[in-house]
Length: 386
Image (cartoon, rainbow, N blue to C red; front, side, top):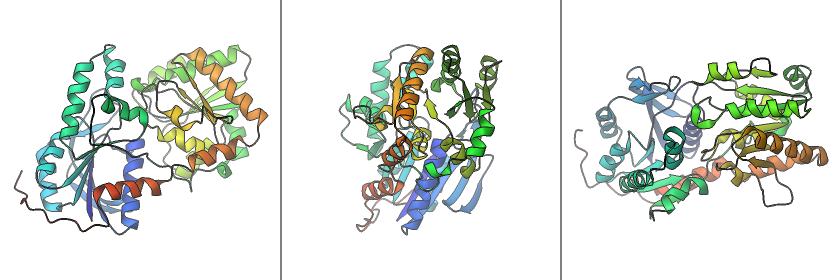
């Protein structure tokens, strides 16, 4: 089967979408399928990678995004689809690429769109108003343009269920269980990162407005006032970097930037006491799942999807949730630290929870959705020039 994935917001320092693309591509190829991913770049380039054939196309930089790019011209995409002749088309951008989905759907290609974000959450985050009519209109229109809308969590599914979307499919993403493990814990590295503190808190994610990264720093301030000798490690970059630097002045905060080395990243995560995910509208948060796989419990926003992974209703939770304010996050962090102190099996329990989300399961569900294993029907509609 030939599978093509088109994604915006993909770049050298992008997080979840980049990881998802690479894992899907590697998995498809390992199962004997052809995979091509089309992403924004400086021009037309094609290269073979471990994750499939990568094609970059001309793009523009999205203002105030910290360098994120979006594809400039969908006509270029349609021409590539005509050349590649895929059996299935995956799209990661509900905004600028939806008409490509409709175009491909009309030509007999199986099309799916990933809902990587909640539109209602984005509207509230950026505009501070409730525009349900717009959200419902956009989501209805989006669903009609693809054979399937993929939501990775129940949280991400909610706004589509509310309008009765009948082609909604729940496909959880996975986590790299080989690279991220409690056995990556490095005591020498931990001591170096602590710089004399006793508790190591990790924030791993993009520094952008909708993710509320400032709450990690402000929660640290509350912890210090409560007598907790903690240091915060920031991994990642983004448009709020300068603001966060200013907020953290005179506080025990270390900014490590974007870490390319996955082994180093895994060691940092496994060496932390708590991983904090303050984003209020996260629909999955791979960083949180990578933290669990590394044996590190997670404190997350109560309004995001991350709580779905934390076994909050069980006798042995692997994290906690907080309201979207620094004091609540500080209290939740202290609660998790108490859990960990009372139960030395916390790292293993975190890892076991993450094992419920292997990429192999994601791949199986995606291939089943695309009809792999059944004979691919011959496209009766000839692909015309875009």
